[in-house]
Length: 114
Length: 112
Image (cartoon, rainbow over all chains, first blue to last red; front, side, top):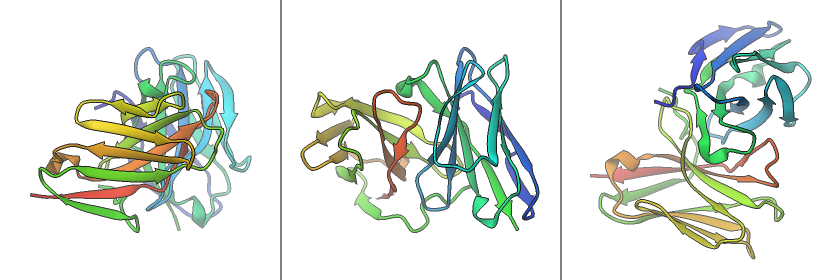
């Protein structure tokens, strides 16, 4: 196991609702990245947080937002849910920005939007 | 667990054989590449990386080859084991920017 935990494991929402996903980073890691993985696809980068500041964002609309807390845990918020938001949401923590070889992924949260 | 292998290209090998998984990356300016393994119900797991100033790198039972001319990356797994069964993704990065770009993935099935 990587030491990165995510909650909840699964959840079901309906279109238009809002959702908050949570990630606890590995001890000592100050950087958290979020990815969306549709079924049968590779993960797509949503954004990265470094020491509580956003440090890069992928091609996702503003209704995808995030936070990183002083303990470096993180939240992903998605407003006005759409059917296409159904996916596995992965967070990954790393020792520092660009420490890809020390980036560890959590098991993901499976979001289903009906 | 999560069926991350749905609709992915599949490579089926016999236990003990060598496996070669290929990846075409998208950005000629990318300078860092990673191979990940993703088992059902888990997040991707780092296997091996390579920088663009190298064309080959070896790890334990794995070798990554990089051909920048044709933007091609391969992962070779020696003496493939049932525990190697998973979906394998390549990922690329440019200039230590905040994002990794993942490829589509290949599902490896190892027959005992």
